[in-house]
Amino acid sequence: MTASDDGGKGERIAKVLARAGVASRRDVERMIAEGRVRMNNALVEHPATFVGPSDLVLVDGKPVTEPERTRVWRYHKPDGLVTTHRDPQDRPTVFASLPEGMPRVLSVGRLDLNSEGLLLLTNDGALARQLELPSNAWVRRYRVRVFGVVDEARLAALAKGSEFDGVRYGPIEAGLDSRKGDNAWLTVSLREGKNREIRRVMQGLNLHVSRLIRTGYGPFQLGTLKRGELEEVVGKVLREQVPGLSAPVRRRTKPTRHAEAPSGASVDPTGESGE
Image (cartoon, rainbow, N blue to C red; front, side, top):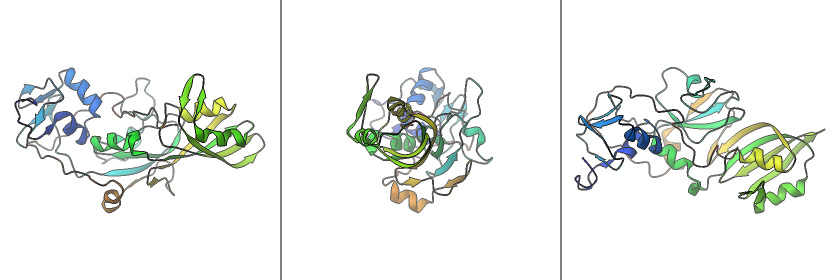
């Protein structure tokens, strides 16, 4: 079944599989190209294929689990973990550290190996993609410890945008919180970030980042979560903060766990969310 012969009914398979937590839409497209997705025993050849209520979808030969209600968790990521399902270097991952009994989840953006703090997790791949988009203009807030001499005037100038090593960066709000010797704590906020932006911008100011903690992502806060702790966002709060959550299209399937997404299934279009 293709977009042209379906008459516009149902939803595109890439969107359905992303919402079911199989992978991001981009990775679903890759899985389709690799011949890993079938519908009603026929190979799916295009991500624009539509899925209707009676269609049976298989990924790597296994029926895709009927998506649960959309759920989101706040997770206090410790440093030393990578935000991926499979790491080619066999480093510890965020997802392997989660409690047993957790459903398959994807991260909203990423925090790199040496960064810590708030990481949002969800069982809805389409929502993960939605919350990552720069068009949301959600503020990402960080506490940053730096080593070096802090020039407050140069920090303030970052609000107008900056350029280092030929790379242009958008506005960053940065302020000095405290200083002790050559170490200082900063509060840094940005709405759209490039890969490792905070570290690279600070390097451009001759400051070395020795610790980076994300404390907020849009309306969600790290709060009092301890390192490694996980807490689900209650449904009422989630609906208030993320309006327009749609009900999933129900498909004929068995409650069988689907295959793992490929390495790097959580794709952050803004790099590592600015950190």
